[in-house]
Image (cartoon, rainbow, N blue to C red):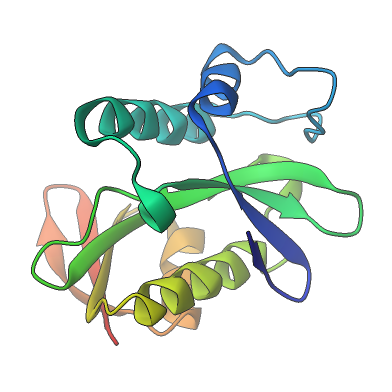
Length: 159
């Protein structure tokens, strides 16, 4: 579990990821009204595939982004696989009701700190060119745009 000033990032297990993909919470799950959105489902699906292929991903898995003041899941963030040659890729997303409050940059900062603490030397991220909010999130988290690939901007942060 990772904590920031306003958030808790809690690692999901396969059962919870399956509930996110299905959009069916258990009674103990506390989700924002608009959780999960398509990005949450995609992140949880990628986590399930990676876990099936590689086993336990340890800290390089998928996390729910939970707002600390009401204990509601408002999105997801995670690594898109294990580090390779000192580099790891991240992805993130928040439900519409949680956007515009700086939560994404706060969550990205926590994931970057985790990667740094595990000896990763570079974190990369991609965002579509028309997603200005995501670009600002990466800028605020210290990333630099390094190029384009199709309709995506590529970002990198050296640690």
